[in-house]
Length: 498
Image (cartoon, rainbow, N blue to C red; front, side, top):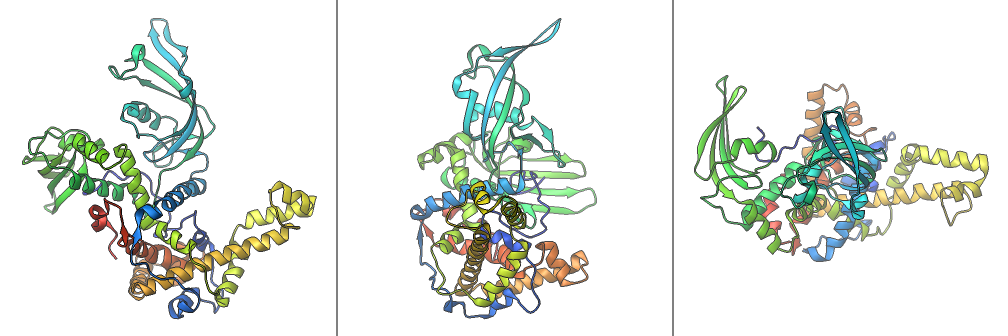
């Protein structure tokens, strides 16, 4: 059993320890290689960057003032993540968003076989936009059935294909307000027309979102409700427990003060128990001894959440997802860099990254656009790509690379400068060097270059260091300065240690 977090075995991206975010301009860092004698990391570490940028570390930030910007960035992040990693695949997960069309058939079984009869469903369900799976408890039976429809990927996870009709059968719950269809078997045909994945952030090559937000939610729930010593544990409760694992080989592991929400696989371990209960469960070669220390009932949590202005527990989770984006996925940094201009752009960095980007960034698009202009003329190509303000495709592409490089350089300079101002740059670089050395040894790479290329396609260290070390630390530092988020105190100690 995993301790101190939700069941998080959802999806692992094969990206080693490199966190490259497709929705920020820094995403292109992963596609760079260094030119001989030009070291962006050395420049950013050693130069006095204050000559290029005038940005002050804020004493505090009001959450209400920045929330709209964070929400916009969070939504854009999810869209970019979907476009980059999911293609036409659709995973039905809490936090995702779907547009779909729907039709239904009543399923009846007789001696003559199974019969499907078309049903007239309410107009509002025929075409649905902005649907959020698992956001409404009364639709959970539908969401769970939908989540196991479609095909399975290489990890055994079910997914649908966008714009491809998929059929699935479910039994409508009785006494759920579904009139004559209560208890009936229905076959739905769903066609997902648009999809935005749930928020995901990677750390150590793994998807850490579910575990992190799960931990935060449990601590918030425990902080805004009272433990009920007489409550019998049921689905949706949040509990605190100790656990000792005894293995058949004689080894022992002890876990103290684990917070979890009792859902899914956890139900069979805790359901029916209450505060003070101490009992054993055996799983294969492990005997686990549990001691229940606190129980926070689901209905009390829901009431407390609503009293704090959230429409539902789902809305609170989305708030925590957005906070996770702000801390760990450059949400705070995006606001800072967007509002800050450089006094001047370092020529060395501009020259280096211009050469790199010309050879690596958006190559297929730029080659395709040039080919079209050469074959059919600039006017046709500009109209096809809906480009305005330029006389030729080449002029547009030159400007595109130039603006991209400026944005990239601005974000790197600002980030490294802030890390220096906050006093974390040198210490984090030491940790980076140690981690790289351990990574080289553990994976038996023959050269540092080979190791770096495995982390970030062509091994640009300035971006590897930023993405994996500076970005999370700067996110934490900014989070500590936010005022007006009434739940921040419950989740501060859940940040990645820095």
